[in-house]
Amino acid sequence: MHKLIFLFLILAVIFSCASCSNKQYQVLFQQRKSASADTTASKPEVAAYQYHIKAQDILEIRNLQNSKNIVDLNPEQAVISSQGGATTQSETYQVEEDGTVALTGLGHVSVVGLTRYEAQMKIEGLYQKTYLKQPIIALKIINLKVTILGEIKGQGNYPLIKDKTSLIELIGEAGGLTDKANEKNIKIIRGSEQNPKVTVINLNDISAINDPAAQLQSGDIVYVAQNRRATRTDNLQNFSSLIQPALILFNTVLIIFTLVHK
Image (cartoon, rainbow, N blue to C red; front, top):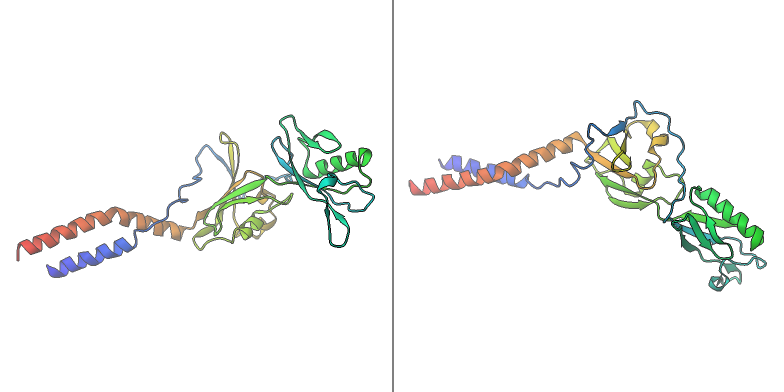
Protein backbone atom coordinates (compact mmCIF):
# COMPACT_ATOMS: atom_id res chain seq x y z
CA MET A 1 0.00 0.00 0.00
CA HIS A 2 2.84 2.39 0.85
CA LYS A 3 4.46 1.68 -2.52
CA LEU A 4 1.18 2.45 -4.28
CA ILE A 5 0.81 5.74 -2.44
CA PHE A 6 4.40 6.65 -3.27
CA LEU A 7 3.79 5.86 -6.96
CA PHE A 8 0.77 8.13 -7.14
CA LEU A 9 2.65 10.90 -5.39
CA ILE A 10 5.40 10.68 -8.01
CA LEU A 11 2.83 10.80 -10.82
CA ALA A 12 1.20 13.86 -9.28
CA VAL A 13 4.52 15.69 -9.12
CA ILE A 14 5.31 14.83 -12.77
CA PHE A 15 1.95 16.07 -14.05
CA SER A 16 2.20 19.16 -11.87
CA CYS A 17 5.57 20.08 -13.41
CA ALA A 18 4.19 19.60 -16.91
CA SER A 19 1.04 21.61 -16.36
CA CYS A 20 2.48 25.08 -17.05
CA SER A 21 1.35 26.02 -20.53
CA ASN A 22 1.28 29.23 -22.57
CA LYS A 23 -1.60 28.84 -25.03
CA GLN A 24 -2.02 32.52 -25.85
CA TYR A 25 -1.50 32.22 -29.60
CA GLN A 26 -2.23 28.56 -30.26
CA VAL A 27 -5.83 29.19 -31.30
CA LEU A 28 -5.40 32.59 -32.95
CA PHE A 29 -6.13 32.95 -36.66
CA GLN A 30 -7.43 29.39 -37.09
CA GLN A 31 -8.63 29.41 -40.68
CA ARG A 32 -12.34 28.90 -41.11
CA LYS A 33 -13.77 27.05 -44.05
CA SER A 34 -15.29 30.27 -45.37
CA ALA A 35 -11.94 32.10 -45.41
CA SER A 36 -9.86 32.00 -48.56
CA ALA A 37 -6.23 30.88 -48.41
CA ASP A 38 -3.42 30.87 -50.94
CA THR A 39 -0.72 28.24 -50.60
CA THR A 40 2.75 28.27 -52.05
CA ALA A 41 1.79 25.33 -54.28
CA SER A 42 -0.99 27.18 -56.12
CA LYS A 43 -0.49 30.92 -56.00
CA PRO A 44 -1.70 33.25 -58.72
CA GLU A 45 0.57 35.93 -60.06
CA VAL A 46 0.76 38.79 -57.57
CA ALA A 47 1.20 42.33 -58.86
CA ALA A 48 3.94 44.41 -57.28
CA TYR A 49 2.41 46.18 -54.30
CA GLN A 50 2.48 49.96 -54.11
CA TYR A 51 0.82 51.80 -51.26
CA HIS A 52 -1.45 54.69 -52.20
CA ILE A 53 -1.84 57.57 -49.76
CA LYS A 54 -5.10 57.70 -47.81
CA ALA A 55 -6.81 60.26 -45.60
CA GLN A 56 -5.36 60.43 -42.07
CA ASP A 57 -1.92 59.25 -43.24
CA ILE A 58 1.04 61.06 -41.68
CA LEU A 59 3.62 62.40 -44.13
CA GLU A 60 7.15 63.43 -43.24
CA ILE A 61 8.44 66.02 -45.71
CA ARG A 62 11.94 67.49 -45.94
CA ASN A 63 13.74 69.81 -48.31
CA LEU A 64 17.18 68.25 -48.84
CA GLN A 65 18.57 71.19 -50.83
CA ASN A 66 20.90 73.15 -48.52
CA SER A 67 22.40 75.75 -50.89
CA LYS A 68 22.28 79.31 -49.58
CA ASN A 69 20.19 80.50 -52.51
CA ILE A 70 17.45 77.96 -51.65
CA VAL A 71 14.54 79.10 -49.48
CA ASP A 72 13.78 76.47 -46.82
CA LEU A 73 10.26 75.13 -46.44
CA ASN A 74 10.16 76.72 -42.99
CA PRO A 75 13.07 79.16 -42.64
CA GLU A 76 12.39 79.88 -38.96
CA GLN A 77 13.03 76.20 -38.13
CA ALA A 78 16.29 75.84 -40.04
CA VAL A 79 19.25 74.67 -38.00
CA ILE A 80 22.74 76.05 -38.62
CA SER A 81 25.33 73.28 -38.64
CA SER A 82 28.84 73.58 -37.21
CA GLN A 83 30.18 73.91 -40.76
CA GLY A 84 28.04 76.98 -41.33
CA GLY A 85 25.69 75.34 -43.84
CA ALA A 86 21.93 75.33 -43.42
CA THR A 87 20.09 72.10 -42.81
CA THR A 88 16.34 71.69 -42.68
CA GLN A 89 14.30 69.81 -40.13
CA SER A 90 11.75 67.26 -41.23
CA GLU A 91 8.13 68.03 -40.45
CA THR A 92 5.03 65.87 -40.28
CA TYR A 93 1.74 66.64 -42.01
CA GLN A 94 -1.55 64.79 -41.70
CA VAL A 95 -3.60 64.13 -44.82
CA GLU A 96 -7.03 65.66 -44.32
CA GLU A 97 -10.36 63.96 -44.96
CA ASP A 98 -10.66 65.87 -48.24
CA GLY A 99 -7.46 64.20 -49.46
CA THR A 100 -5.20 67.24 -49.20
CA VAL A 101 -2.19 68.18 -47.14
CA ALA A 102 -1.51 71.80 -46.12
CA LEU A 103 2.03 72.87 -47.08
CA THR A 104 3.88 76.12 -46.53
CA GLY A 105 3.69 78.36 -49.59
CA LEU A 106 1.47 75.95 -51.54
CA GLY A 107 -1.70 75.72 -49.49
CA HIS A 108 -3.74 72.53 -49.78
CA VAL A 109 -2.23 69.98 -52.14
CA SER A 110 -4.20 66.86 -53.13
CA VAL A 111 -2.20 63.69 -52.47
CA VAL A 112 -4.78 60.95 -51.81
CA GLY A 113 -4.47 58.08 -54.28
CA LEU A 114 -0.84 58.84 -55.10
CA THR A 115 2.10 56.58 -54.30
CA ARG A 116 4.86 57.94 -52.07
CA TYR A 117 7.05 58.67 -55.10
CA GLU A 118 4.23 60.32 -57.06
CA ALA A 119 3.38 62.60 -54.13
CA GLN A 120 7.06 63.45 -53.66
CA MET A 121 7.47 64.41 -57.32
CA LYS A 122 4.23 66.42 -57.32
CA ILE A 123 5.20 68.47 -54.27
CA GLU A 124 8.73 68.98 -55.57
CA GLY A 125 7.38 70.22 -58.91
CA LEU A 126 4.94 72.63 -57.27
CA TYR A 127 7.63 74.11 -55.03
CA GLN A 128 9.96 74.51 -57.98
CA LYS A 129 7.32 76.42 -59.94
CA THR A 130 6.10 78.72 -57.19
CA TYR A 131 8.40 78.94 -54.19
CA LEU A 132 11.80 77.19 -54.30
CA LYS A 133 14.75 77.05 -56.66
CA GLN A 134 15.83 73.52 -57.57
CA PRO A 135 14.26 71.85 -54.51
CA ILE A 136 15.00 68.25 -53.53
CA ILE A 137 11.99 66.99 -51.62
CA ALA A 138 12.06 63.78 -49.53
CA LEU A 139 8.69 62.34 -48.50
CA LYS A 140 7.93 59.40 -46.21
CA ILE A 141 4.65 57.89 -45.00
CA ILE A 142 5.43 57.23 -41.36
CA ASN A 143 2.22 55.69 -40.00
CA LEU A 144 2.35 52.41 -41.97
CA LYS A 145 2.83 49.27 -39.85
CA VAL A 146 2.33 45.53 -39.63
CA THR A 147 1.67 43.27 -36.62
CA ILE A 148 3.49 39.99 -36.01
CA LEU A 149 2.30 37.40 -33.47
CA GLY A 150 2.85 33.79 -32.55
CA GLU A 151 6.15 31.92 -32.41
CA ILE A 152 8.40 34.91 -32.99
CA LYS A 153 10.95 36.29 -30.56
CA GLY A 154 9.81 39.91 -30.84
CA GLN A 155 6.03 40.09 -31.13
CA GLY A 156 4.41 43.46 -31.72
CA ASN A 157 3.86 46.25 -34.22
CA TYR A 158 6.59 47.18 -36.70
CA PRO A 159 6.65 50.27 -38.96
CA LEU A 160 7.01 49.88 -42.71
CA ILE A 161 9.75 52.38 -43.42
CA LYS A 162 10.41 51.28 -47.01
CA ASP A 163 8.19 51.10 -50.07
CA LYS A 164 8.80 47.34 -50.20
CA THR A 165 9.36 45.25 -47.07
CA SER A 166 9.49 41.46 -47.26
CA LEU A 167 8.34 38.90 -44.71
CA ILE A 168 11.95 37.76 -44.30
CA GLU A 169 13.04 41.30 -43.39
CA LEU A 170 10.26 41.59 -40.80
CA ILE A 171 11.15 38.25 -39.19
CA GLY A 172 14.78 39.32 -39.02
CA GLU A 173 13.85 42.64 -37.44
CA ALA A 174 11.68 40.80 -34.89
CA GLY A 175 14.61 38.63 -33.77
CA GLY A 176 13.80 35.47 -35.72
CA LEU A 177 11.53 32.48 -35.13
CA THR A 178 11.34 30.58 -31.84
CA ASP A 179 12.25 26.89 -31.59
CA LYS A 180 8.50 26.14 -31.49
CA ALA A 181 7.79 27.82 -34.83
CA ASN A 182 6.45 25.99 -37.86
CA GLU A 183 8.38 27.61 -40.70
CA LYS A 184 6.04 25.90 -43.19
CA ASN A 185 2.95 27.63 -41.84
CA ILE A 186 3.35 31.40 -41.64
CA LYS A 187 0.11 33.24 -42.32
CA ILE A 188 -0.24 36.76 -43.68
CA ILE A 189 -3.76 38.02 -42.96
CA ARG A 190 -4.98 41.11 -44.75
CA GLY A 191 -8.22 42.61 -45.96
CA SER A 192 -11.39 43.59 -44.13
CA GLU A 193 -12.95 41.73 -41.21
CA GLN A 194 -15.81 40.68 -43.47
CA ASN A 195 -13.55 39.50 -46.29
CA PRO A 196 -10.14 38.51 -44.92
CA LYS A 197 -7.52 36.99 -47.18
CA VAL A 198 -5.02 34.51 -45.77
CA THR A 199 -1.76 33.78 -47.57
CA VAL A 200 0.33 30.86 -46.27
CA ILE A 201 4.08 31.17 -46.73
CA ASN A 202 6.40 28.16 -46.50
CA LEU A 203 9.89 29.34 -45.55
CA ASN A 204 11.26 25.88 -46.26
CA ASP A 205 10.84 26.79 -49.93
CA ILE A 206 13.71 28.96 -51.13
CA SER A 207 11.39 30.70 -53.59
CA ALA A 208 9.63 32.30 -50.59
CA ILE A 209 12.51 34.77 -50.34
CA ASN A 210 11.44 36.54 -53.55
CA ASP A 211 7.76 35.59 -53.46
CA PRO A 212 5.64 38.70 -54.31
CA ALA A 213 2.96 37.34 -51.99
CA ALA A 214 5.43 37.76 -49.10
CA GLN A 215 5.72 41.51 -49.69
CA LEU A 216 4.05 43.13 -46.69
CA GLN A 217 1.33 45.76 -46.82
CA SER A 218 0.23 48.24 -44.19
CA GLY A 219 -2.26 46.67 -41.80
CA ASP A 220 -1.07 43.09 -42.38
CA ILE A 221 -1.14 40.62 -39.49
CA VAL A 222 1.60 37.99 -39.61
CA TYR A 223 1.00 34.87 -37.52
CA VAL A 224 3.67 32.22 -37.01
CA ALA A 225 2.07 28.90 -36.08
CA GLN A 226 3.49 26.26 -33.74
CA ASN A 227 5.14 23.14 -35.11
CA ARG A 228 3.64 19.71 -34.44
CA ARG A 229 6.06 18.83 -31.69
CA ALA A 230 5.21 21.98 -29.74
CA THR A 231 1.50 21.38 -30.29
CA ARG A 232 1.77 17.82 -28.94
CA THR A 233 3.64 19.12 -25.91
CA ASP A 234 0.94 21.70 -25.25
CA ASN A 235 -1.77 19.04 -25.63
CA LEU A 236 0.02 16.88 -23.07
CA GLN A 237 0.28 19.85 -20.73
CA ASN A 238 -3.42 20.58 -21.19
CA PHE A 239 -4.25 16.95 -20.39
CA SER A 240 -2.06 17.03 -17.32
CA SER A 241 -3.75 20.20 -16.09
CA LEU A 242 -7.12 18.41 -16.33
CA ILE A 243 -6.04 15.20 -14.63
CA GLN A 244 -3.87 16.81 -11.94
CA PRO A 245 -6.78 17.72 -9.58
CA ALA A 246 -8.12 14.16 -9.83
CA LEU A 247 -4.69 12.73 -8.99
CA ILE A 248 -4.31 15.05 -6.00
CA LEU A 249 -7.77 14.09 -4.74
CA PHE A 250 -7.05 10.38 -5.23
CA ASN A 251 -3.71 10.64 -3.41
CA THR A 252 -5.37 12.45 -0.54
CA VAL A 253 -8.03 9.74 -0.24
CA LEU A 254 -5.35 7.03 -0.26
CA ILE A 255 -3.37 8.77 2.46
CA ILE A 256 -6.47 9.19 4.64
CA PHE A 257 -7.49 5.59 4.03
CA THR A 258 -4.02 4.35 5.02
CA LEU A 259 -3.91 6.42 8.21
CA VAL A 260 -7.39 5.29 9.26
CA HIS A 261 -6.59 1.57 8.80
CA LYS A 262 -3.23 1.52 10.55
